[in-house]
Amino acid sequence: MRDPYTVLGVPRSVTEKDLKSAYRKLAKAHHPDQNQDDPKAHAKFAEVSSAYDFLSDKEKRASYDRGEIDADGNPRFAGFSRGAGGGARPGAGAGAGGFSAEDILKEFMSGFGNQQRGPTRGAGGSQSWDPFTGASSGGFQGGRNTGTGGEDINATVTVTLEEAHAAGSVPLRMPTGKVLNVKLPEKVEEGQQIRLKGQGHPSPYGGAPGDAIVTVKFERHKQFRRDGADLRVDVPITLYEAVLGGKVRVPTLDGSAELNLPASVNTAKALRLKGKGLHGAGDLYATLRVVLPEQGDPDLESLMRFWRDQKPYKVRDN
Image (tube, rainbow, N blue to C red; front, side):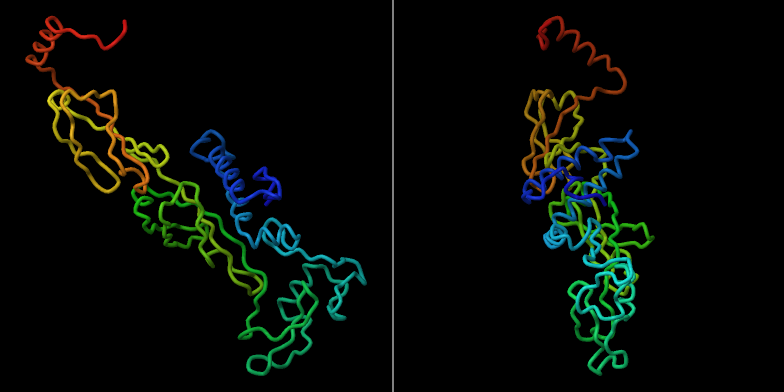
């Protein structure tokens, strides 16, 4: 990954609030749904999401700022040279000189450089050398290496508004073919990322596996149109319901709800159902649509001609 500060266009001194603001702005600009004609939109969106996830992790950000890890979370090894006699840190031992950082890491993970090779579990453990500090430490716990962890896996889970509203669990097939059960957090937002510990790639050096970074995407709904936390829905009504009023059933994310129509309701305005929006934080706005009979009705036509000739009224300026 490129420098995450550059990806998000923020300085290293950026606050958590400004970091989140920058991420939301870029995520919205590069979201695949908003850039369907741009084949690179998904990659841009993933890069922005990965950069924000990296910098929002306080430990990773601090390590990166100190130069201890790179933008992919891999350790950087200062003080080593690729040439012979090359600058090994004090305490590295005679066998470490002249190796590259990669060579030293591989040898370290396979037990190279141990001061004591015989004893294992229950016998005091073998000595190991820390390539970061040059110091020796006790044996590995349970005889298992705790080296560099595996790489993270980025994935996207598409959920319905009902699933997001209920904060339920949804299945997700990972790029590896493994199917995970993803529990959505309360009041989940589109573009929000969920970290699944230990569900990434395994470590080739015996360390902990990486994590799965899952980005939430909302599926387009057949009925509801989302406006932040508010929802909008079209509700068909008959002509006589518009004139006389009545009660109609309106769909919501929690099931249908009853809506009272006043007599002579004006369908130019939407009726609000308070607290019936996404996560209960928004409202539901029902836009009424008068639907006439599919087949023409002579009596209705006769009534309308009478109304037009005897009781005309204006709804337009011209």
